[in-house]
Length: 176
Image 1 (spheres, rainbow, N blue to C red):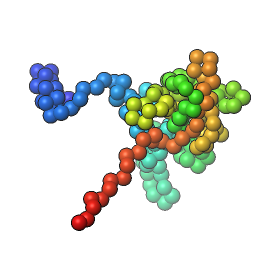
Image 2: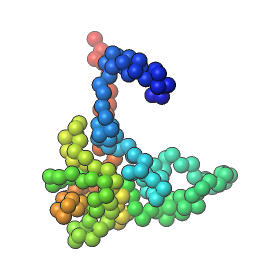
Image 3: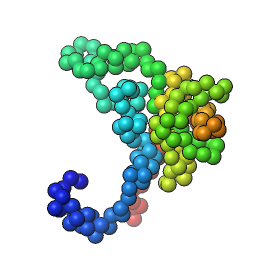
């Protein structure tokens, strides 16, 4: 919500009176991570393309027989679409006890670096340690075991599909 400073207190009080619960950035971060939502500066940035980040659905690339005005980075995206990417943003569920954090190195079984964690936490709703990481495409298959270097300890993790949390399908009310 954007409001003028002189109205902020009244809006805050009205939102609380309506039943809202205040929360901070850490709460926002854990919930957005459970939902597999990327945060600019952590999970998406100028160094990664939308295709690498799993956000290809937001980019309209040229189609055969249809004219499309060029845009910055279009050539790179067209090439990645045709040839594939060298890295992909993937979900990780930690098998071992510990928390993967932004910047932790992800390794293969032999200890060779294959990626880096962009976001990670212990989730309040799913009650498990999760992370998102850019992984080399060769190591990004779902179900693949990888290892996160957390202060010198190699913690096993499994590559999983995003989002981590999916809202249950609504049920129809019983007919009487």
